[in-house]
Image 1: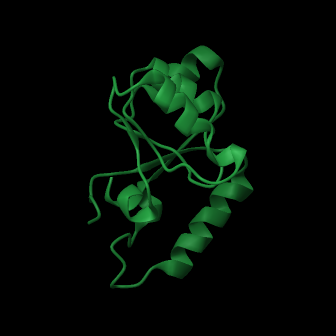
Image 2: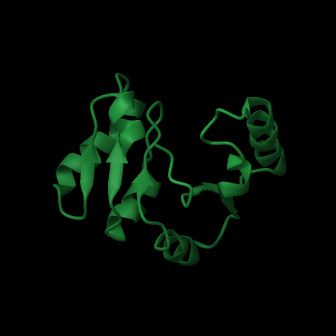
Length: 123
């Protein structure tokens, strides 16, 4: 089930990307959708100098990796901050980078590799 107090934290690369996300969200909203009004729960972070960028990440509760193209440096930052991290390994190299990094760090800090999208959504 959806947690009403959660938020999606994203890096704002361009205003066009943020606008496209908001437009897509408005199209998908229905009364039965548990993510209704989810645009208000998206937090955009601007590009920052590296030291500030890492400190800002420390404010997150969990790092959810994207399944189709995994994090690389961003996950390394999250692991360095001892942030619990979740990843769903895929078939391609780009979709397995995080799994390799998470396996190498062990389970300290709340590392979790899930096996399917259902488990990923449950997290």
